[in-house]
Each structure stands twice: as C-alpha cells, then as structure tokens.
Image (tube, rainbow, N blue to C red):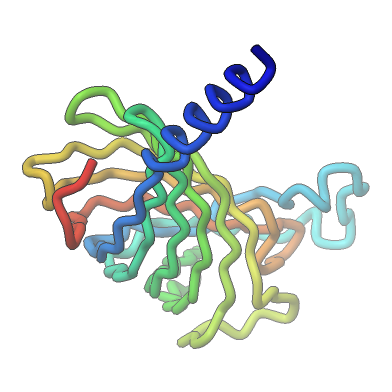
Length: 202
C-alpha cells in the first residue's frame, strides 16, 4: 500500500511539472510618462518637510509621449497563472513648468520586471515589480537626482490570437527621482502596446 501511494505521488508530481511551459516573446508600444508634482517616494515618507524652500514656486508637470520595447519569457505554471520575467528599454521623462520656464526632460531606462499574470479565457491580469536603471538622459540636471527606480505595476492584456495580443499597464515609481524646491518627484507611467509569443502552447 505504501508503495502504491508513493508511486501515485510521483505520478501526480510528474504530471504537475509536465504542465509547466516556457514561452519567449517580445513586446512594444507607446509610453505616456511624467513625474508626480509632489511625492517623496517610500524612503521619504517619514522625513520632515524641507521648510527652506517653503516660499518657492511649485513645479507643475505634464506628460510626454515616447516608446518602449522589450523581451520576456512566460513561465506558464497552470492554465490560470504564469510568471513573466521581462527586460525592457523604456523612454520616459516629463515636462516641468514654472511661471518663467518649461523644460522637457527625456529619460531612458533599462527595466528588469517580474510580472504575475492571471488568465481568464482570452484576458490576462498583470501585477508585478520593476527595477529601473537610468542609462541616458537629456535636459535632466537637477541638483538632486537618482539613477535607479523601484516600481510597482498593474495591467490588463487580451490575447487576440494564440501568439498575438494587446496590453495596457500602469506603473508607479517608489523612489524620488529628483528634488525641486521643497518637492520630491517620482515616476508615473502609462503604457499601451502589443506582445507576440513565439509558439502556440498555452
């Protein structure tokens, strides 16, 4: 009896592992990005405000449009769940305005993301984390800036075919990227694009 139970456990385990599939793919699309107008990021939440700049003019921000492109490996553990590591090149930035000037800052990040995907027929829900490394910038020279970011993301995808789909995502940076007057600023990012996988296994 013990031998039969042991064999059944081995059989169930082998069937479970046999269901795991790996699917490489590519993704790309349009970014709508900006900095928040006043947000210290997670490591500044408990710090006292800087009163030195209290009377200075507040900086306003608005969105810029650019693109992202990347590659992923979809590790499908079951019909309902997959873990999707990603490497993406993402062009972001912001427009920063005061009453006297307007500056468009352009930032290029290399993003390493781990995305949990939950499948419901043709739809898939996304939730994950991102580590972003600033690799290039233009018109971005504040007196206090950061070259890395830690973000959280959520999103929604739709499989049009077994290989091709569309997606939308929102990502919020958790680390202050720059400081202007009394304000800290973090990344906000909306993405919409397409993805393509290189086989038909689901």
